[in-house]
Length: 98
Image (cartoon, rainbow, N blue to C red):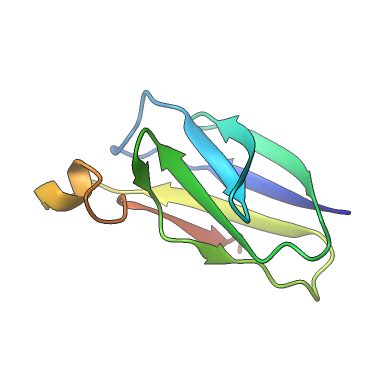
């Protein structure tokens, strides 16, 4: 098992909603805007993604060669109604913490 730390940066999309977090299709937690969360995940985990209702983020690949990982969850405003209503990937992405 290893740890992954996530920080959900404040942004416009889903600002007052919790983002459910999934690792390889299994729900592992939820995170609010401005919150930091540390999860323990299996060593062989391959990807993480977020979900609100039926809408999902684009999956972020987890490098199994790394020990601890820190990611920032970034959301942005979109005028694309397909993204806003979750018909395409939500305007939220995972990035490595700098």
